Amino acid sequence: MDLANKNVLVIGAARSGIAAAKIAKKFGALVTLSDAKLEHEIKFDFGELRALGIELRFGKQTEELLRGVDLIIVSPAVPIKIPLLKSAAAKNIPIISEVELAYDLAKSPICAVTGTNGKTTTVTLLGLLLEQKFANVGVGGNIGVPLCEVALTVGAGGCIAAEISSYQMEATKNFRPHVSAILNVTPDHLKRHGSMEVYQLMKEKIFAQETAEDFLVLNFDDERTRDMIHRANCRVLYFSRKVELAEGAFVANNRLVIKIDGQTHELCTVDELGIKGGHNVENALAAALTAFLVGVDVQKISAVLKTFQGVEHRIEFVREIGGVKFYNDSKATNTDSAIKALETFAGHIVLIAGGDDKLTDLTDFLRLVNERVDYLILVGDAAKRFRTCAVEQNFPAEKILDAGYSMQRAVELAAEIARPPQVVLLSPACASFDMYSDFEERGRDFKRIVCEL
Image (cartoon, rainbow, N blue to C red):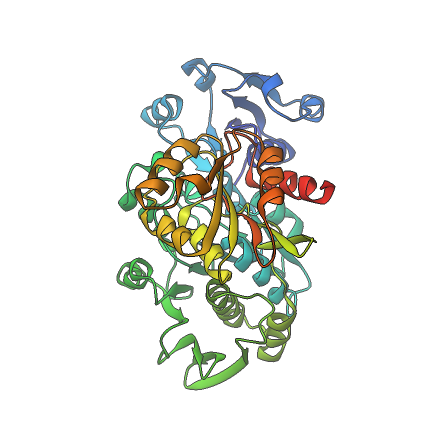
C-alpha cells in the first residue's frame, strides 16, 4: 500500500487507531486522527502525535472531516455503521480496518485466530509454539499490541500470531491469513452486530479471501464452526475434544494427537497439559494444529504444551487467604466464557459477576450458578437484571449481594463470606466499560484489592 502524500483519516483514538496514525505518518501520509470523545476524556498523552505533525480532531464528527480524504482507517471500537462512515462509503472513499493495514504491511505469514472464547489463550500459546521454528515472531491484534505494529516489527522471514475479533473484521476486504482458526461461535456482541447471523458472518470473513494454498482450522464440536467448511475455498482441518477424527487434531486414549496425510503424531496426555479444563484442551489442539501447519516440529510442540501455564485474567490464581483461593477471570466478558470458568471448579464458589450488560440470555449460565455457586456478588450495570434472572431460576435471594459499582466492596464482601473449601472467583460474564476502560484494568484492580486484603 502506497501511503505517500495520501490524505488519511484515522477514526478512533484508542491503541489501534493511534498506532495506525503513527504508521501512516511514517510512510508519508498526511494524517488526521479523529475521536468522538473530547481529548480530556481519553487516557493518553497526545504530545508525541502532535510533534509528529498528526492533526488531532476531537468531539463531534461531521462530514467536513471527509473533505479531501483519500483513505479512512477504522479502529476496531468504531462501528462501521456510524453516520460518518456511511457518508464516506456513499462518497466512495476507501475504508479499511487497522487489521487490513497490518496485512498490507506484513512481509511474513499471518496465523489468525478468532472465536467467541479462548482467543487470547490460544494465540499466546501459538506465539510460543511459533518461536520454536521462527527467529522473528510477533503476537498481536486484539490481544493488546496493534497488529500493524507487529507486522512492521516482525518484518520478513518470521511469522505472526494474530488474535482477531469480530469488530476488527467489519471493515476488512482483502485480509488473508495463511492459516486461520475459528474456535467457537456463541452469542456475544449482539448489541454491536444486531444478530447472531451478522456476528457469525464477521467471524467467517477471517477465511473469506483464503485460497487452496491456505488452511482453515475449525472446531468440529461446535455446530456453527463445523458447518463453515461449506463456505471455505482453502484446505480445512478440524480439531475435536470429543471425536476421534479421520484427519486433524483430537483426543484419543487421553492423548492429544495430530493426524494428517496418513501420519499420526502424539503430543502429550491431557493430564500433562500445562493449562487445565476441557476448554483449554480445545485451545491447545487448535494452537498445536495451527503451528504444525506452518512447520513447527512435533516434539517441540509437545514440550511447549506441557509447560505453558495460561494467560493473565483467564482463571488466573491470585492468592490464598485463610485457606480460600482467589481467582481472576476478568477475561470472561460473556456468559459462555464464565460457564467454562465455573466448570473448572467442583463447586463451593463465591462468584463476583456483572458489569456492562451484553443482554445475552442467562439461562445456561444461571443453571450452572445454581449448581456450583454458594454466594453471588453482583456489580455494575448488569446487577439488577442478573439478580432478577437468578431469582427466577431459583437461586436463593438471600445469597445474592449487591456491591454497586465498587470492586473494592465486592472483594471485601467475598472475603468476609468465603470459608474453605470455597473459592472466590471473579468471572463477570459481562464487558467492563461501565466501570473500567477494559477487562485488563478490571482484572488488575481485582488483583490489587485481593493482594491488599
